[in-house]
Length: 499
Ligand SMILES: Cc1ncc(COP(=O)(O)O)c(C=O)c1O
Image (cartoon, rainbow, N blue to C red; front, top):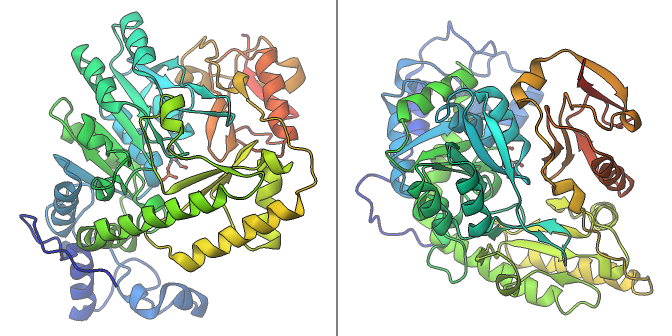
């Protein structure tokens, strides 16, 4: 299958120290008078045994001396984090067991002081807004480009960042989303240079880019943020590589930040009883990538390029390709993200998603008004791609007679709203519930996002406008799922009292 790469690293990338320590503990046979209550599977329900396996439960222990401490790593976790740092090229790497959400929160809490200004693209994921609330930072929103032909937000331009930096010389950092959910990557190297010249940090939400390090030999693939000057990078190992859901890495890339402060923030945000299976999965995913990453990524890119070409032969469908590099701020496109526009066959994204899911038993990663996004990962093969292609051909043929839809461009969703009070102050302030239709002019007390991609269109502390409400209603009418507010049907919204 995959050829094990010759070990060109200084250390033992072919080992998995966390997994080794767990096996050794289980094999040692110590009688368990400790947590967890299932006692290495002895008391586990058969369904849990089936789910995790007997061996998995035997090793599902934590906090023993040989298993190390996530918050003060000195043994196998330290070793595993050092191996990851070496592989991704970080100065230091932290294993995270509450997703990239907690990695982003720790990144913000560990680099900012309360009251610090931070530049944030308007298409930031809600975990960034959560981090801003926790860190008590003041967001200054900057506008990514809106790609009208697709109806989605794209990348930040260097000019927009430069303008924001000049207008906000007291800002401490920019949090970039790189690459976007759609695999688009802007000129991060130039953005890093602008920020560093003005003594600001580049913090990167690279939730969708943990695999890029292993695609650096492939033409047109984006380079990973650590190699372009990022100071801190949060990566969802679980989203694109082989670790368990909820596991991520936080990489420290420069001496402009303090590792101890970031680690202290991570310790505040994460369990004191981290699940060892999650930690081991991060370690094993790192081992897998060290040994086979480049070959696996090569194959994923080849498969997706082939698939893209084939999809573009289907009448009415359009799969975004490298033409996007000449018409937008996108500098590089992650080939393994396939954005397929379905408006040409008369379907909205959610309609096409439902057809694929229920008729063809195919689940995409996300749908927006006009498009579907499919992820090809290092796990896929030709047969999988062929099934998707056949389903898309069939769906297009079935809808061939339909009038194409006009691409919806939800421009008003991505406008910077007026930030009247800080998100933290609004989050903690007394609130009242009003009808959404009566909320124009009020200050939001909660977040509204559509999921996926989980980008808040309204955050606590922001003034609600009629234009925003209209755009929100339009999204709802297109079948987009609302997350964030107490009333997800959006009959009511919580606003700040006395404002
Ligand atoms: C751009 C982006 N950032 C951050 C996150 C949060 O990652 P996690 O789900 O690992 O907490 C997501 C999740 O979808 C995301 O899409």
